[in-house]
Length: 277
Ligand SMILES: [Zn+2]
Ligand SMILES: [Zn+2]
Image 1 (cartoon, helix red, strand yellow):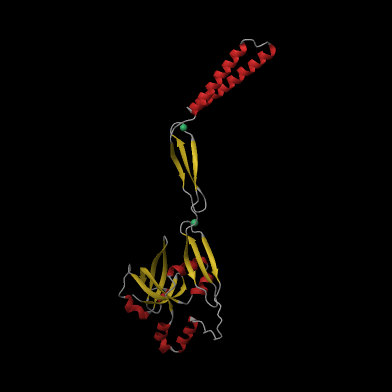
Image 2 (cartoon, rainbow, N blue to C red):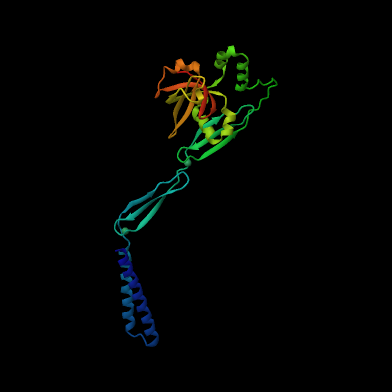
């Protein structure tokens, strides 16, 4: 319909124009006399017809939504509408959503290491990493030597009788979650090693499998395959339990969710684990 009216209007405009030119030509070559009035009348009628057709062309149909592009964090979306009657298409923009920033990991600064706050957008994964300057200590007291598990290992080898005591006294940092460690290792293994390797942490996860053989278990005990859900990913890792944990291990089954303490070798490998519950 739209096209039909457009053609009509075009024809009317052309007709008016031709008529007008004809009138001018006649006016120049001959004296217009009474034809002047007729030509004006015809032009007038044609122009009026044009106006009517233009009005008819402006469709009054309803616009219905035919397509929609959802906006993302950074790009705007768009809704496309189509006129039910004439098929005219128009679009309307939707503003970009902006990032939904949340803190996903936070490493507190120490006196020797910078801290770090990692923020991530929950929708698109956009990440911001913010450095936190290391702590400035103004005290004149000598700083105590940092708790180093290598040191404890040397101690334990020199006094084998005290082994159970020293494992118990090893510090467990309960403020750090597995998720935090996992993300740090995913981001940068070397940096994560600095922060987490050889430290003990407490982890709660589900047992996916249990094996008592293999390379890890030459001295007895068991290796558990653990699973933990981080965002929409199921992350698997190994937790090696020593022989003295065998009795405790008999109380748990695959599928159970357990809490244990272990020494981190990487996000995927934990040794010297002890069952807590
Ligand atoms: Zn329309
Ligand atoms: Zn985003």
